[in-house]
Length: 263
Ligand code: OOG
Image 1 (cartoon, helix red, strand yellow):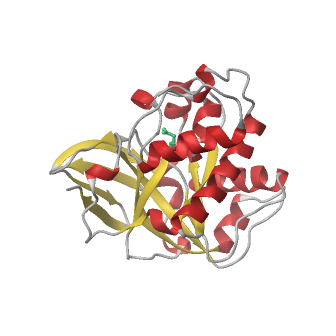
Image 2 (cartoon, protein in one colour):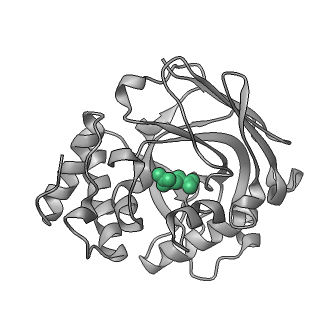
């Protein structure tokens, strides 16, 4: 499907329908090449408001994306991005993920941060992030770009809420004081075969650096992270594709493991 308009509302419906029907669409910059990053975040906001209404859900957190140099280079950008997590995106280890609801899903290993203080302002540091974090936990994010072949520009992916669709968080909660969050080793496998290895150092050097960066970006728009929110700090390795019948497991040093099965 091709977008034939620059009308905000029509763009939003185009993306929401793609998600609802689990069907890929042509990226919006093909017909809207001058879409700016500011405008893309505005579209993201409007899309999220519509999605909250339509799915009777609520916002539970924020996810960061393109925080690893490898992923930024792959896309030819030097900027990370952020999007929002809704309650209906939360998936569980014990509940099979339905392949029929997804377009071309990929799994990414991430560290989830749970905040017990607000984190707001344009001078947030890594130390502020760590002191506002009550726990961290292992997580797997499932991304499912609405765009054909998972190909997009920076502005396309921002408008599409950074490809968000599902996330699974482990139940082992660890205080950030009890591990070196800057170098958590990770192994991700599919059906028992190792597919990716990585370290939290891939996330802008340290996941707290990525979150401090996002706090500054949010503050430009008069926003911040709120107490009680979950933050997914960005992929620690390349994403891997999965299909029905696949089991994905990510094991993190000091944090335990997290998995899901796709039916
Ligand atoms: C964009 C979102 C990537 C991450 O952690 O890097 C992302 C994409 O690759 O579809 O969530």
